[in-house]
Image (tube, rainbow, N blue to C red; front, side, top):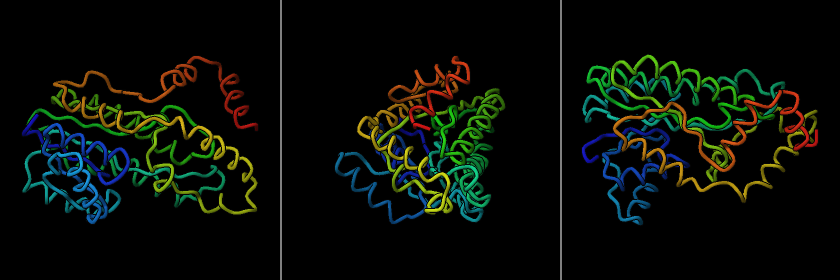
Length: 281
């Protein structure tokens, strides 16, 4: 795989950081992008600790900023062609549907969906012209199953799933493989540093306050069983190493396949009772 070039978004934290280190370990030429380039020092330090070469290139990229996307397109003209694109940048917005403002919904979609689309638009034409490439989008189990208190995040990931499914069918004839990674709960900062709460849901007067507390308590109870993010990085790396990505969806994490099976085959009323009983609502 030496000589293959990968562009990854959100490379400075969470799955992006660990995946970047693993890709460097395997000898890929990595273009690591992030909103704040000062965070590249964290990547360089971790590469040194793991005795692997640092990413070949670092680029500043805010996937929600049109000027930043335009700069990416200009920078790519001077870089090796992108063989693999990993759309990883994202964040989670907590809050109940009634209380999440339209602006907050837009901000969630700007990163988790429109950011993916914008970066893909910048990279895809060259892949298509060369007749080869891979695009790997980091989704979530939330792209398949809805959870209360996460309507904006769930909606953005459901939208990403549908868009990616269309993309795979559209570009497959041009020799480009597209895949979705669907992690369950892992020990990354998306539920700490990367998580935001809708302003209205933080108010003491919120009618959903006790409901939100129950959800957060349930998440806290399960935190010790969250998986190690390294296995997600290894899965992404494995797909990068493959000659062909044969499937669209790759769910990963403890209990993920079971919960997907139950959601698809249980009658809705049974599923609803399970979720609400767990949260005592």
